[in-house]
Image (cartoon, rainbow over all chains, first blue to last red; front, side, top):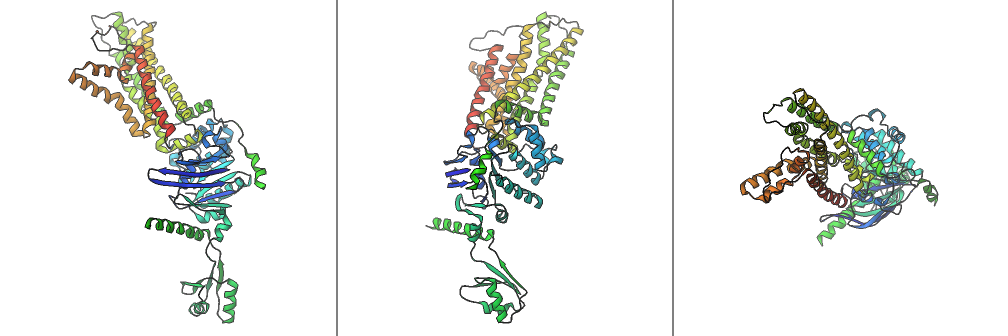
Length: 304
Length: 282
């Protein structure tokens, strides 16, 4: 359980995290979503005591990170893949970290295997690709078999196979009852991984809800209609609360009507349909809608 | 809630942070980098190589005394310290600035969130290894120099206690000089800056003070010079055959005081480094 209360971080005159309160519960994957510069990484750095809050607190299982007796065994952290000395081999990096908590060599070999790094374990990290560095960072986070995982952009730089690996790993760790908190700016990725989503924009929480509620925030549900008779059918469907967009010469995107109603209208007007597919609102749309509001809110504030 | 029942399984288990663990960790870090190995190899080569060179180039003087011969022997074994202190300073700075430069420091400080024990264990491991390597190479140089000098007709007394304290003093000085660089590196958090600061203190500061002393002929400037690390160091490993002339107002520290001066420098930078490390965002 991670709990932030009134958490604030200012760097000079810039407020990176602005009076943020949230909690991350065990047994589920909590996604931390927001555009670059929204304050996700800063919040995570505050969580593990790398930065000192300007105000408020953030605790892990009720205690400040710095007060934990065995931090690596309670919290696994991936802040950025580059937190590794480039002149050292992957295995020596992990051995050095493990030694601080007297974690044995067997566990080091275990996480190397888990992250699929066996073939490069003895190579110097300086030559690693972004994806391999990311895997090493995740291996380091898992060293202490921690109950809480804080992963900043874990899929960054991973190939598709790696992305699926992280997704399954996060879901598996949460299913074991651990607290999994991961950030991303990839909304589509979050839709597939997270149970709960906290959306951050300009250092403030915009939304904090289960993933399906966030999806439901997407305005309206669109239906794609492909027909050789697009011009005529478009005119037929037109009504005040219905939006019709001509995406391609023979493709319409209709919002405000269900696929069934469009199908019936087509049949009764003898319009040939080649495709009729409802588009579920994507997290992407929801997210853009949410952050757009946030930007407008700020613009209004400035104009005052 | 179903989740609360499963979470109890995942409370922290196994061993926690320990200072012994931190020492092992820092030992792995120090020995798993090529730069460390290279710096120690260069330092040992300098200490032994220059010592042998000086012993070989020995010229018998007409006014030679047993004491002067002993002095020449100790000088042979310690002559390279003027250079190897530069190597040890570079390494001392790199040990910590390498972590800042690569981002490793964030891994270190998340593993050791109280921070100070990470710095102390690093300083301790670096100090012990540097002392061991320095002492081994200086003593090797001393033995080789003794063999060479005795083959040239000298009769070097290996049981000379003052000689041994000078040789040990040289190793202690190199260790403390390295620690000053390590703490300067912690303060500056940047390899180029840390190395520059350390070399500046060792090379540039004495020259500046020396020029100032020569121009103003002020005795206090002379005294400032005496308390800079490089001068205090030469007192620690110097084997004085004849006592220095007693000039009024000019302080000359003895080997023990030289050690205290060096310790004071280490503590000074160590305390600043600790305060900054504890306070700053990493």
